[in-house]
Length: 121
Image (cartoon, rainbow, N blue to C red; front, side):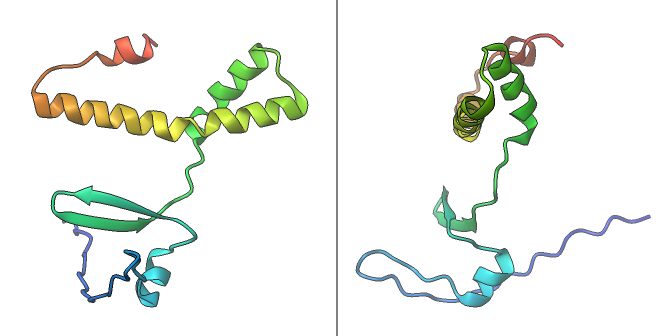
């Protein structure tokens, strides 16, 4: 069965930049892409990509975070508050790891192995 590539249609619209460097996202783009109250700006070569911020649950680490906090003796409201604080650290940590990997890849050097980073499982 042949694989069908996902079609990406490009649309173009010229928008103005205010004296305060502000732009307005056209409503049809705003709605189609599911923008909320935040947007992420990415500098990619000579392009600026503006995309909606998707909710990051950090769910893949939640169980580990909770287990560690419980082992440290947290419970009740204190556990909840500490969990929220620790969960907010996940995305910045992952982004730092990606930046470090990009830097290593660009330099041609090799970095630590997965076992060195995460331990043997």
